[in-house]
Image (tube, rainbow, N blue to C red; front, top):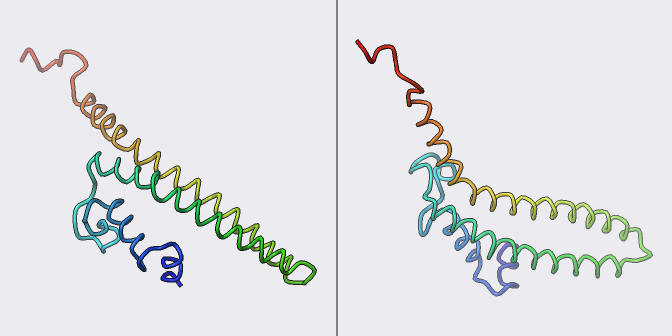
Length: 145
């Protein structure tokens, strides 16, 4: 079924998923330690986070919206085709549920993109804050000893 979707959108079966996986997990690198069972390194560079956010923005979000529009059009045609039949309300209910799920997916993609773009700054601020905690505020009573 996935191969049918890929062929319909002019891609070799699985090509889009592999391309995006490589861009989200680092150029040419296998999936991270969580996906591969724990081996490898944890973390990524700010450049990799930026590349992943850009992939979400330039590939995942537009391609998802295109797929949604295609599916909505096909579903609306089917609902109209079954108008007057008992199947039409059920199909409409499924379409409404799917529409709500799609909104959640689009929101999640936006959240992940924002989180990736903000993660590097959070790490730097955290490092600075921890470093400040180790600096003495004033003179220590041990300094004169």
